Length: 635
Picture 1 (cartoon, rainbow, N blue to C red):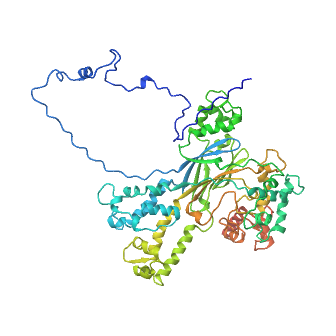
Picture 2 (picture 1 turned 180 degrees about the vertical axis):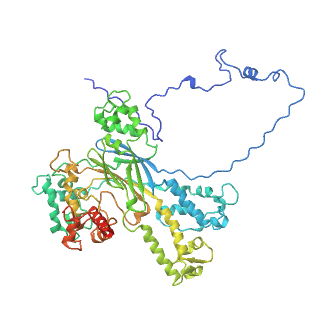
Picture 3 (picture 1 turned 45 degrees about the vertical axis):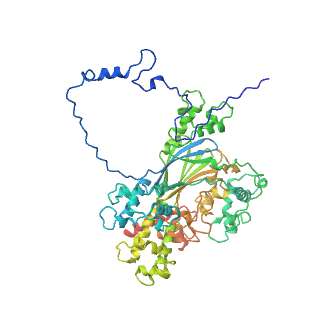
């Protein structure tokens, strides 16, 4: 019996820059051949060059020449156009491919900072640097003023490491910056002199892959809640976790940490995973996601090989076409791609998904403070119509569910003292040491035997001393630091990650590494939606690999490293930033509520504010009480 020969799959598309699909054969028509006035060599069909000249030449031009030769007309030499120097283009829009369990998703992610594009911010920061160097205010930089500017290499160092220290080897010069040779540097020439640092303004980091340690923590928490040991959690079993506050809250902060809840599995020295056989013996887990589940590409640069990868991954019957059941696309997306209405997508039709409009468009916008960050879809209604479940956890964090799998999209600005603030305090102390009681620093204070100790001040002395009086005041020193800080602030990272969260992390809604009373009370309602519709118990199937993309400042990583879905700042309490002053001061554990134990007034006063009688004063209740109190006082 002769076996049926499996058809050969289409060749993968070449790596490229959003190239046109090669699935359709390219037939070049003879009509596209360029016209030539020379004889074709095929009979009398060609037109000779001399014959063509004879047809178009004026009378007498060929028959004979005039007695007096014509005087040739010489056109004036064209004036060279003044060169124009513009800022470089930035890759502030990326294509995010998410290979979720149910279907692939293509998200176009646009990065913003302070509500502006990176090109606008870059020009703004360079304008401040240019004006800082332009000591005489004439709108251009002289030979001397150029020496006060950042070099391209030095600015790149500032963006990467948060520090700038000029050296003689990388100091900018007039010859290097003056492109049009007029012996001065205009602002446009100034912008054009920073190509290397501009290219590093947005960096995409390698995908952080999954951790094998999370299974052990999930098993420990699941076993603690599963009172009857049947491998399922009922509503009552989940609600009883609040009772563990009385027996497990070792630091008495009215919250439960992973270490307090499961001390034998999650010691403070780090998670110790259980053996694989023990961890997975009591229930089914999804297949762990690989690092390739999330991929970032610059706009228009998704390679053609992606189409081939999708066919090889989802094609179940080996016909090299994908039905809707195989690819998992929603009705609208599939119908749009299925041009021939065959009920299956061939390579050419599927390639339209790679090169056409994305499934979703998202803007991640960073701000100096967490409250100003945002993660917004361009069209939430359209996303819902295409089958995506959307949850706006907070203004800066959006969670999409593709089936039961979450995609966490986050513009993250940590609510802790910034790295720049710590650095500024460090250099302020250095300034005070060099000044030694004076209100300014003289050049001699940072030279000679003090040169090594005060090297940073010594090398920036001339640039920071803007009035050039030989005295560096604290205001001048701070102004120069703030100039650098403006560049630190706009250098951004896009960090994709693949993390399978623990059951503890699913309970920890605000990701602060602790379970508050309110999180414990709302746990059932938040977790049951992760089960199939109509479920009455929770199983381990709610643990799905979470695919995430996080936008952060590059310099922030030197002070705090935070990952979506993992413990944030263990041992550090968040500082409340919302609500009346009395509410923020009483919320000592920073969980967003004031409990009876935290409230410093009487029981009657507490009950007057706690309108829902849940023994917690929420932010809304505090603001409502405060508003009512102000109205009563005005009367």
